[in-house]
Image (tube, rainbow, N blue to C red):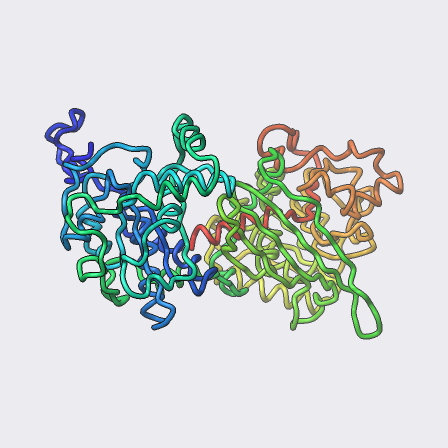
Length: 598
């Protein structure tokens, strides 16, 4: 296997035979090296005045990555020069020998297995030599007794169990005769040791721990160690073959530090950018994923925290809302202000803020900040689309939109993206002028939006404005209520059999768009059971006034219908109602869809 690793020739593998295969070691991959260089960047960020970094050398990917970042740092700062010190066990030290000789040199004749097998080897991988030779300043062949000292010290002083490769760097930093490395080295004040490796045999660990009883014994055992590189007659020196010159950024055959920094830079997306990157059809899919994740409990989220902001003659009623969530290795939090009166102005949205996406699988890294207003607008309408596709009759032709704000426009798009054969859209608003303006806007949207799943209509959809809610909804197959009202605008007596309702506008326990009769007549579904009888005024007030008998009137979450745990529409005459409050998981899956696409 070592011959295959060293030569990349796979012909000796019986299963492959004469097939033309080439073995590529992952440590040689430029992306792996670039990823490792971020470790170097973190070290330099946390320890700005570090003099040297001791790194265990195995295949070279970790050392070359960290070394590349350091080279770029040194070249940029021209001061506080940081050295890279590679560490190999004395029984497997091809880099130390190659650096001593100034060329790739085989260590095969000297190689012996040891408890440091995660480090060193029989030879330097040829694809790594040029870069390694450039970025490594000093290559150490570390006596095994010193590696043992590192393992002992980490365990006894730091409570860390490390394999031999991890102990190498700590032992080398503590006991290497630095004065033999050359001028300036003896003045090092601060060094960093990279501790890597996957584990150590327990019997070997116990042997090392039993070997020493205190730090003085460890030191005495290491100070007399022989640091000569096998295969060379010389001890460590500061000649040209032992110290590599620092190369400029342009000479490094990997991703440069600037490019890595650019790749790691936090992405911040404006409203317009979110709109471009999150089209409705894509958001419908991500929202469906969120609704399912909530119902099957793979997604986690507490009920949103809503804080009412102070109100006076100048300060209008407003709320500060936080909505955290977790799903599939990602965490997100939406932080917004809600000012309902902004719906009457063109200057500010009623919902303003950001959605933050974090990598919760590994390091908690903040990956993306996106404008919350556009995400909220799109995913709210997308949730109604998911519910409509799940509960509405397949032959639904007439859509009624109650409200003239931004959600009216978003719901027009989302309802047509359901693919249902909608040919007529009825509009109502508290202001007739606003309703007429909405009609113009929707006509423009119909003609210019890049539709994905809209019903293929040969003629322009019919748009009509009505002066009363009753006239607007009495022939509708689908109704979207989008008004943050405290008094009902939709009454149950106006709803014809078979209608599906998306109730969206009232999201506080003091608000309602529908009267109790409407709630009582409908088969009720929601996005979140936990929130429905806490935040949904339509439902809370219907229960309080006795229009519905108990919380059992709620049949379940729409996500539960999607996964088959709850029954959906049972016949063509049934009135179905989706009470939408918006869930934090919808924000997470939406912003993740943007991140994944990017």
